[in-house]
Length: 345
Image (tube, rainbow, N blue to C red; front, side):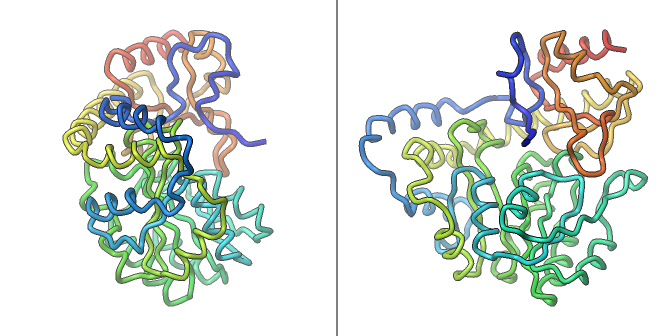
């Protein structure tokens, strides 16, 4: 059974959902308006090639349009990539986002799990480069990682991409949370795309612009055959007209993005201090969420009694019932979270 955050329907009286990591500022008003207006055109089929959206992404990120693939959220693109490559063996550093494993198992792929060590704060190191000798066809690497919020800079990614290229491994780099990083300009691997055709970078509007319900993601890759193969490996018309129009509008929200990054950075630092004061061990946590360890295996249930939903991380490889993740929200909501956690002590 799949387990993810955001399952508020499983509870009768959740007031605050800290289990999903979307922008605390919510969806920009201009994006909402674009999606609403697009409903008037929903009697037509959407452009299954997402031409206008690709053009907007291309101009915003300075990537050729033919290197861009749009999908029904980043998760859709994960499945498309796996179906296009049909890997025999894949390497997965863990803990990490579970949909990689789900897509790989659905394709009958052998999975080699590489544990990221708790004693090393779940940081990847050169052991990942050494593990590439396992004979894998595909490597999934989440940067910053979900759920730990740990990241590596572009220099490490370049070394990883070079090693993967040498061994003919496709590197799927998930950067869905990268735009929340204070160090974004030193982390994003989009500038490496043209040099590494084996690099397939995932992005999503979901988290950055709080568009989880609209479902919109995109990928960048210089390998034209792989882009075309991934596009052909899923359903047609999978990106709705409202999602496409909302995405185009979102890319114009540069001030909103900067404001979001500043808010997340400030609130995350405050939350980390408060969690530490409560005796909770915070690890990594550089994105718009915090990963911590508690002495209680029932903290999720205790918080739910106080009408707050948090992410229990026991279903991640290498984690257990004492590991949790919470989103960064606005300050009044974050205060409510801390008050409730204090009561659970």
